Image (cartoon, rainbow, N blue to C red; front, side, top):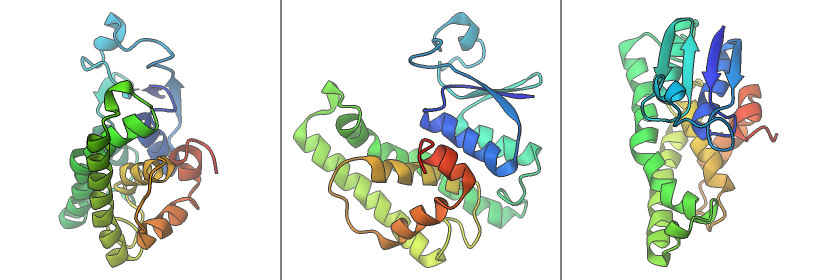
Length: 207
């Protein structure tokens, strides 16, 4: 059986759990991370030298990095409906997965640490204002894409890209600050909320 190492509240672990729900993959999850078993032990570092969750164990195969994991699961467990084999269709899915990791994810990190985690190191007012502005700019990019597709981030159908993007959208709505009106993002949020996997893992298990 597939084993997932990482606490269920981690946004990156939730990517994997949501992907498993979409593909009906059975798994065993083991709590690792802050508040649970330390990822800095020799046992965990042997699996992931970055001391980060999630890690999966699929028989004797070990893999870390959440986006790599969901791509692997789609390839191994008949996830063609989420991750198409056609080169151009797959490239569009990959484009938005990578954009979330390299651009969108970075844009909200300071604001999230300041406004949700209340980190003392993230309370400089000018830096926070700049972070909120940058986050909004990236969400406006997403809004334009969703307005163009009228459905999901890479096209008409739900895809693997909607998992990391959807979790970022959840974080957008759950962070307390003045957000611009983004109608297509609002519609997308409600569209995702009709999916069982999103209700379980996209909103931290709160419908």
